[in-house]
Image 1: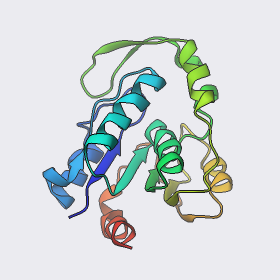
Image 2: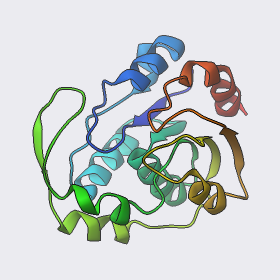
Image 3: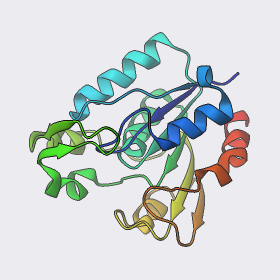
Image 4: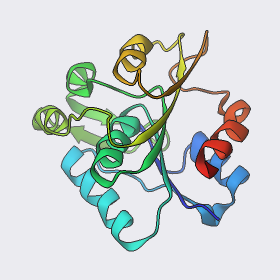
Length: 182
């Protein structure tokens, strides 16, 4: 049985729609979905603690979680599935510095300007990992063509339409399963 580590996006939680869907499909014991702290360095530390204590077969990351998954897939030579991944979060999140509210539970947190520098330090090219990208052209938050260009040597599926939340992930679960088991 494969172990999946799901990494949520900015201002989200481990127990969101995508992780609930993944747990329902793959089994609750097969999917780990932690709440990641707002600090990118702390988020990476949290993820690496899980990677060191649990055998993880694959990373699945959405948006900012996709950016983190890329950093870790490169470092640990892992497989990763990325859903509308962020490619330049230090730019796209610049306007979100200050106090924010998480979508999932409305908990308030501070996204500090120094976090943008931390994000830039985590930048890496997708060369060592093995990736499946699921992109939607209707992403209203991120330009899907940036991810399409950055990961052009990897398997990319572009669905025309959709949105940043990738709300029809259920339609891709069998494809995700096949990629995991390859």
